[in-house]
Amino acid sequence: MIKQKHQQLFDILMQQFNSGRWGNGARLPSIRDLAREYGVSINVVSRAVEMLKEAGMVSVRAGEGVFSTVSGSAVSQAVRYSANRLFGQYASAKRLRVLVEDSTARQLAFWNRFFESTAVRHRDLDIEITYGGCGEGPFDVAFGGLNFLKFHGFDPARTLSVAEQRIFAPRLYDGIPLTPEHCSLGAHRNYFPYGLVTYCLVSRDPLPTPVRGEGILDYIERLAAADPRKKVGYALSSGLELLVNSGVFFFDGESGAFRMPDPALLRSVFERTAALYKAGHLLWEHGATRDESSLAAITEVTFFKAHSFREEQEITPRPEGKLFLPVIDAAAISSKTLFPEECFRLISSLLACDSQTRAETEHIFNAVRPVSPKRVIGGAHPDIPPGFCNLRGAGFQLELQYFVTWEFFHYITGQCDFSPGRLEAKIRWYLDRMAERRGSPEPPGRGTDRAVRR
Image (cartoon, rainbow, N blue to C red):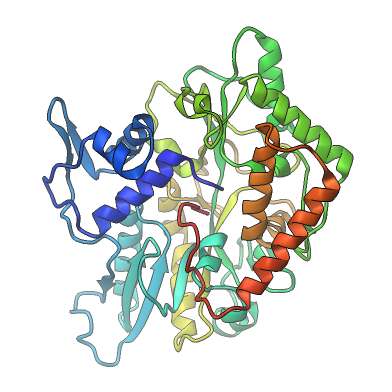
């Protein structure tokens, strides 16, 4: 999912805090100065500062400015746990280097407590954690979204698979409906899921509940027809997610190979989306000036963001459409680690009922293990359809995600005409070039867009 501008700026500002730029009590540059420094609008900066405030990073003093409320030490630096002894004191300890995608204050509170309790239970471990993906490897194990894992070199060729899991942790997924089979990349089973992040809608006014099987386009059209004089103002989070929600797939669900969708369906979805965008019922963060400046009546968010919205705002399940498609959080273990069994111990601890329950309660991710009471933001936790994660893991190639999203955007904003044949030729050319780049000596993750969250 491509992040909106204020979310990207939030990530950049978090990196500044991580580097220690603003110590506790330090005054940040003014909103206008930040807008000038990063080349964005004042509205974008204001929304990013609001996110910093909600994350506990800053306080806003009327008439004085924005002030840091953190210690100033680098959040992305390694955090070390070794039970009640000094890290490195026990010469025979097994030292695990762990990479975690999450980096907000709230997420760190969950993960730090998790690793601390895990170190107490497993006293033979020294655990060194790097948050946010800013540290240098090599790492033994990583936790995050599938795109994040691939960004940082945890691809099937460099990670352990279910074959090793059966040796070192054969009962890891007993009683858990979501397994590595659902995160497969073609024939590879190298990602070990521990959580799901689902979407919901946030709005100022109450919204009608989506009808079962209703897609995003159907939903917007229904709201627009109910009151033709009013703009729906639905803020879209991802063009590719919208296409999949409408039944348009650019890949084979089992193999992950590129496959062109039905041209008639593709044309219908493109034209319906363009019409809604032109009428102002659909907004896109990267679109016209009105998209950025308009206060959207409806905003798509992922479930872990829902906690930060004000009490007067309404939360509604997002229309499921043709495919229930949550974001998968998974772990991957480096094939070069000397401690595979210990890495599987970390995953097992994260899959334990207490960890899964606390993750849901603290809005970190939805549990993959049935927990009681079941509590999911944004709607009921549905049964897991066979193969739905295959579509996410195999088909949502990062290159394809970027390319299709921007081609879709160019069409609905009137910058290009619709031509399935030309679109297919461009996609194949682009995928061929990306395959050549993957064969180059450039290290994994270098040059990638850190604005993409999962």
